Length: 161
Image (cartoon, rainbow, N blue to C red):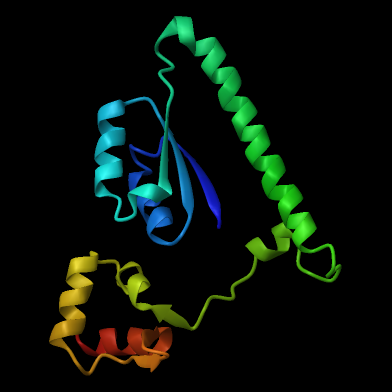
């Protein structure tokens, strides 16, 4: 399972936190506001995917110790990621490095049904309504799973305007 650490994940990055959780990531969210954290967890479709980490850096008495733990957590997460990526490729020395994979333009050509709303830039409910109302939307079914070809879906959306 993939893991993501989102700092400030209840503010401007709340949609990022939710998207990561919706797409199979285990998300650790660092934030200082317990109310916003509770709202974020409530919005998450998979609540078990979100781990809250509350850090009140305005409390001067706790700030020093919590920030030390924060930086330690960042270092451990980064080390785990890079070591894990290195071990994953130990039997394949010709595999792309992390930096090379960031430059990759390769994206999957098929979208899962749960990813269509992100591609269209609309809510899940709106995407489901659109799919229900338009049986002509391009899709294929593989092993009872519905997939949407990106290029055909993009063309279909443009033709709807």
